[in-house]
Image (cartoon, rainbow, N blue to C red; front, side):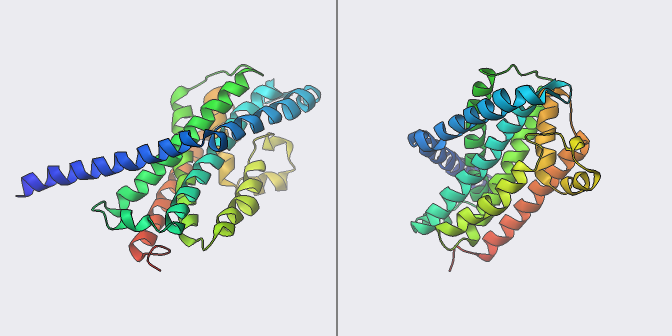
Length: 264
């Protein structure tokens, strides 16, 4: 009985996971005018204003042309905001629409439900990141110093902020609550995370404060993959990304088992 049941359960789990990922992908593609186009337009404006107009006066940074230097940061910024935004909107929408119960009563374990939403966040984060990278190629050329570092940085960062969006959606009581964290915490941390500058330009006290910002490590790990330069130790950067990924996953699992926000 056990030998038959286990493959059957594994197949059920796999079908459920695929269904969740395909649903998220179809939702992203169906409303592409809201999910994919705006980040591309925003990135274009960043490159025009910061890269072409201001960058020509700044000169080089980190041994590279300013537009080359900020390109990885802008790509990572789009990955962060879209991975987070996809999961928080999708999961809270399921709660608000009262169809989260369909998933909760299914035979899917909690860890797989979380994994399905994380995968959706990764899909949107990577898709938008690719769009922004294509936009960047119209303005500058990108070196590829270490492709595995690039892939690992994107995946870990997407996982971290997908989990962050999932946790935010569990606590949110209304749509205002899902916009509070991105507005007052995520956006400031992103802009102060070394996207547009090297922290070596900051006063010593500001450099110390900047090292408390986890996004600094994500941006610099990704930048190292392209340019081979970083304001932080790359090994430490990956350690911090892994720490946040594990910590937020444990928190998400704990909240799911307690039924926070989904059994109220």
